Image (cartoon, rainbow, N blue to C red; front, side):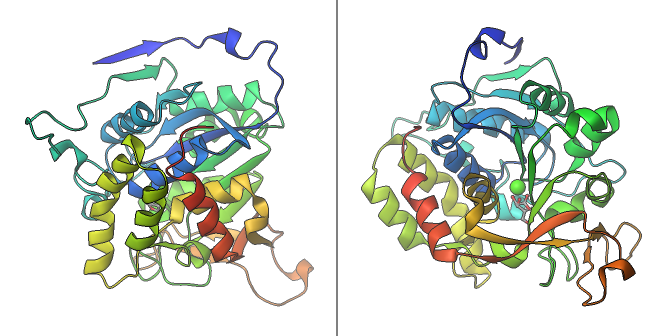
Length: 343
Ligand code: RIB
Ligand code: CA
């Protein structure tokens, strides 16, 4: 059942901003779900809104998954949720069910209790009247100069928000983007990372709009690996419904990693949230970045100008990208919080 609700403006009136307001744009996705859990249990931030975008799975499945996660976490102040783009700007959607399961959360929908009831029944989907791009613009206006947008999927919603109201989008203080591969190979093709591959036109538009972008690419996210043992230890410290939920949806991700000889689940999206919470976890460097849209073999490639030449001989930087990360501190922050109840 899908219901829509208007926003309760009383929630903001009179409130003193003691935490950083955050909007998460996401295509959940196993690592997106881990990222949402991290954000929802980090007292430094307040998740004010979540917008969904087609990517790992369809936007319908991704939107239902957001409500599955919220049903388990039950935050004291539930964020506003809006459904975003169902397809990239110009191309057919490419999904990643082989990585995340048919439902996007490790096929949770197939798990049953001993009596045969579904362990995770379909959630009630209560989206805003606004669509994803409009909720991004509305939230940037509600928190001018404060909002941190954390983009965890293809950048289609951000590109549409840009088209509808660039000046409003520029009210965001930071736009932390998980995506791209600056000095390492891609993960979908030799050249491209998934989020930029799915919608290269959207990524190119976002990087050429003068936005305060902090890029968290595969260069650093691939280094932050969650192992079964580390998760089991975190779950053991905080047993309960939330811990079982994490184990249930991440199992598929560990099986995928094992079948590909990887040491664990790469915490792509959780690292973007961690960097939003604690910018000191990564070292950002200014670069000019373009995203390839015309290449046959290089669609979605991150073209970062890393030439060691005089600044006046190349385009001015349009983002800051993380090429170094404190792996140990990032993992510790994640593991301390991923199973913790909301702050
Ligand atoms: O390449 C990794 C990114 O693509 C992550 O955001 C993952 O969830 C997928 O969206
Ligand atoms: Ca994602």
